[in-house]
Length: 149
Image 1 (cartoon, rainbow, N blue to C red):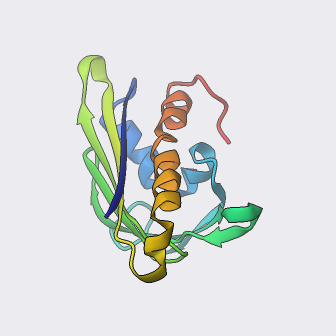
Image 2: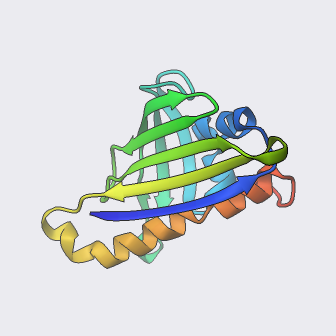
Image 3: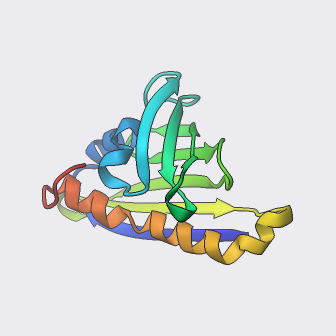
């Protein structure tokens, strides 16, 4: 199994952070790999919602990265699974109240490579590490320290 996780503390309430994360249309604002995103089906931020994404892939070409929300507990947990693209990890955002109304945000990704994907384990791990560390940009945007988009 390949896994990556990163945690930051954001000076915003769990409800605010959750609302931003649950709306997948915000992905392009804080994740540098997202080239485009749209709501493909379901209600925004709810279990069963599917977001169609185009991501920056190897060699500069775009790849699919569609995902489905599989668990949604406002202010606490947002879980998803990637349903299109070469690698299909599962993801989890865990939100915990912190001091002074802030939120401790953990972002984790796990992936079980099979077949030829096992040969790409190192590359997949590096990509997943880069992805979870985008939380630093999320923090800056939500705290008003970085331009969105």
